[in-house]
Length: 144
Image 1 (cartoon, rainbow, N blue to C red):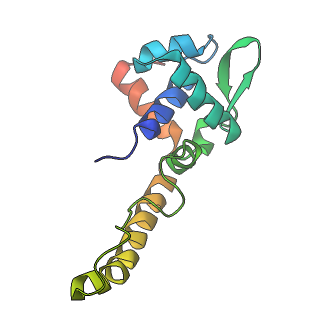
Image 2: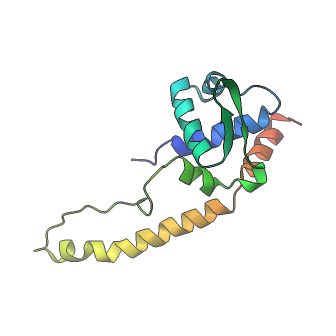
């Protein structure tokens, strides 16, 4: 199992919009870069818009970032695209056997570990901005 690819696609969309600045970044055009369906891109762009990360206007093709790339963290993107419900990165099975010593105690033993791991991941994502991703790609492609 893995975390939904929406997180990676959200980062892809935002990075594409920034590197394509000054040109039209329509859902059809972005979908070609992501290699997916434009309907999925429109859905994702709706999530990014609701989170205040992009601006889109009905009837006008394209989108632009609502903030500077240096102001958008990967945690912002992670939360915007609803990768997982709040504090639910790691789920614990709900009905272990209460007659078993492991079943009786497993949830209470691993819940704090899972919560700490999610917090560490989120704190790490706060430190990385869209600007870091844009700069890395621009360097690799010798853009700018």
